Image (cartoon, rainbow over all chains, first blue to last red; front, side):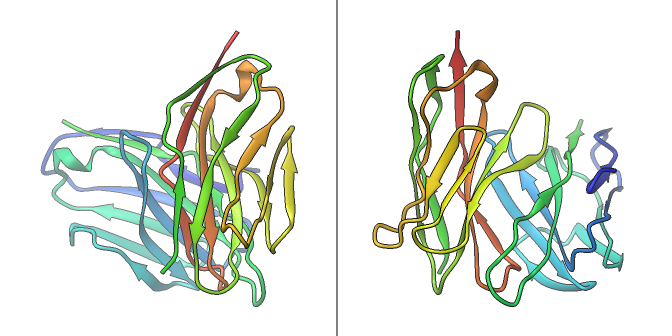
Length: 115
Length: 112
């Protein structure tokens, strides 16, 4: 009963290819996120969706496009992969509260290696 | 704006040593504060949280107190174990709960 699941766990691909990472949460949360973690473990927010609507779109290349078919899913599609895209990508979800905040739940990560 | 600053690692301790990882924050309004732990090859897991000033979060022997006057949320454990070796992230969430701000992470290695 994984709360936030993302697939695949590992992805090795050549430069120039297009790939997708899928994410699903079964927690009933309204908000989902994509984070990129570099080799120094630094976490950078990429996108945030609330009820299928984009609410955060940090400065990421246009080659990255999130897709949210419903509020339980947030997929990440990457076009024309580059060596610098190699990283671990984490999906997360949270329930926005009207007062106070709840924690974010993270998937296990997808280690993307571009060769 | 909102941001989190935590002490840089790596930190190496002997088993049973006392651990402190410092975390300070800047926030508008009244954020919630969190510590996450990331074990090797895994995603981030919530370790503990505090949602208002003077709250103390605790879990697995770790604790942190939300100090509004010093804008801090330092993580402490009285006696670390080898199994505590991981990367620890301090984070805050703005009022709406739609945005999380993470520190840079502190790598902890505990040696027997």
